Amino acid sequence: MKVKVNRKANFNAAHRLFRPDWSDEKNDVVFGKCNNPRFHGHNYDLIVSVTGEIDQETGFVIDLKVLKDLIKEHVEDALDHKNLNLDVPEFKNLNPTAENIAVVIWNKLRPHIADTKELEVTLYETPRNFVTYSG
Image 1: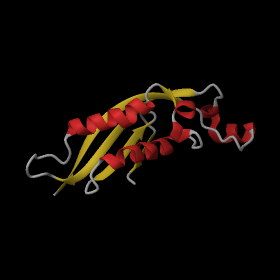
Image 2: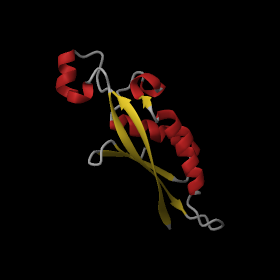
Image 3: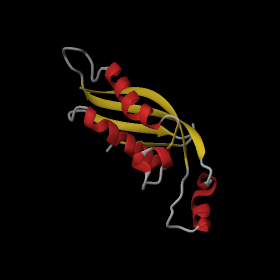
């Protein structure tokens, strides 16, 4: 029997969506307000889900304290109150869209979650705009 366990977290970060190889006009057309050269910010909500068999000894799929600590160390400490474009190495050459941020978060957490468990990341950029990545 598989069960999905979820942990919610949040972080605040600034970013700018643009491609340096495109003209200012094309960046404005494609990314609109998100192309602001002075950046803009979001209050991101994150849901990290781990799916797997219930451990018969502990009753856990994953210890939520362990998951909380992993999210704090690998996501919140790395992204919270940062300018994603300037302060986060993963976005040096990667446009920090919600899609790319979710993949980066998944990649940061995956090595720390047992291979026998499925990992899914849902990232809310706004209450109505969110993405999900599961590898």
